[in-house]
Image (tube, rainbow, N blue to C red):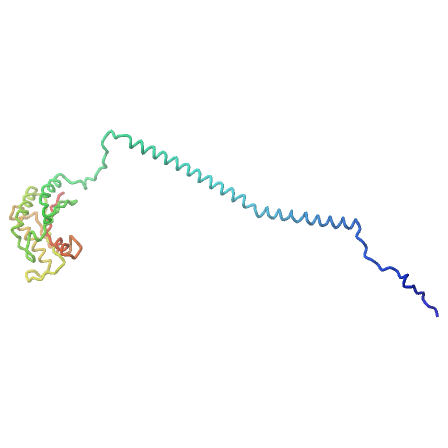
Length: 256
């Protein structure tokens, strides 16, 4: 029987070992890595440039705004300086003539007759009992009820004769002016049986003053008597002082 040839242990073939890298393989690997490293930053740079491009437009816009505001500020400084110089110049210059007043509408100018009536009646202002007021269309005379009448009565008191005489004298000197006499009361309802309400009391007092002016020589065709009760108050409060102001007789002298 034939037997195979056996190699002694000392003569076994050596095991295959991994081949060592050659110089060519090392150089190829290094070139590939360099290309990869060199390519990636270039792509990132292009992407960053695209993302940051808006900053240029934004910076230009901010710069233009800054220039615009600087120009506006400079113009305002120039205007302020010019205005200050003009003000100083006007203050230092004395006007050669008196200042010209703006024209007044003829309807708002008091007539000579209006001024004359007002001047004469203003002498009646005394002791808070008589008030003379200039109105647009005439002159108004307020006489307190305490000067003319007793409480709740419509008989003219003798103490009021001196004031009514002066009023009648002015009215006689201007015979073409209409005269309206109004009676006014406070808001308290009258409790006497002589008058049913403040309407009757105010009308009776106005009529009593009209009769006294006629007795003093004023033409009755010019006179009108009205009762207003408490509907046209001179004061809106409810204190005794306010109610005393509301109790009055008003004589209105019309002036054209």
